Amino acid sequence: MRRDIFQAIADPTRRAIIALIALQAMTPNAIAENFNTTRQAVSKHLRILTECELVKQEFQGREILYTLEIEKMKEIDKWLDQYRKIWETRFNQLDDILLTIKKEKK
Amino acid sequence: MRRDIFQAIADPTRRAIIALIALQAMTPNAIAENFNTTRQAVSKHLRILTECELVKQEFQGREILYTLEIEKMKEIDKWLDQYRKIWETRFNQLDDILLTIKKEKK
DNA sequence: TATAAGCGCAACTAATCGGTTTCGCAAATT
DNA sequence: AATTTGCGAAACCGATTAGTTGCGCTTATA
Image (cartoon, rainbow over all chains, first blue to last red; front, side, top):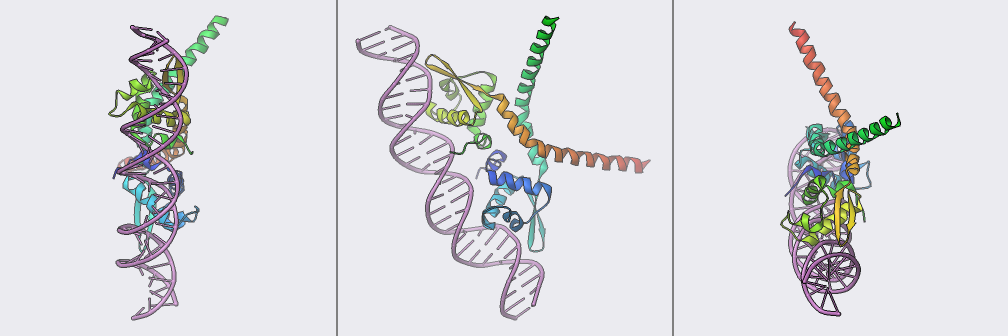
């Protein structure tokens, strides 16, 4: 079963779950209360998030607290990096153009 | 038809297409040559990428050149920003801890 | 010890996805 | 003018997905 971080964040509900537990660890029931869906549906999303290590389980008696593995989010940032270089270059080129115009005005 | 940027980058082939045309504008055929798939399959991916405005078409006679809309990539960066704050805070907290340990050693 | 609560797992369903094949259109080429 | 080339769109298919329902297990609570 292919599970990667990009597929994990593709689903809007999963992104919402990530946003929720980023603030504090939560149980599946507590998470489900925030959506118009069942606990089981949330549970499935949590399974996917856990499988790609975006989320970690903390067992507390019969409750399971889910926390965000913020480190994993950096992988997206790392992927974006190659494109960040491009848009920064373009920005600098624009900057150069603006500078040239400024000089010409003088 | 819900088309968002996160769903667009979920597919590995689409990420590869993005990486390809980031370097230079390409036609569907040229793109397809880089994969073990048909032009039509690539065409479908390009349609999805175009629909969510990650990619732009440039008509040149009967050819269509596809270019990356790098600005749109920033939206992912923007989304990541809320989490970047978290991991930077954690990093700083770790930094504080290390500093405290250092001081205690003295 | 019986009951309730919190949870994951498995089976099922409707919808969506990625891909192929076939088609038709418009722009080049002969 | 006939043919080739580049392309998108539609029809179709198998695989995957998100969700529901129905379990059974474990841990609290009465």
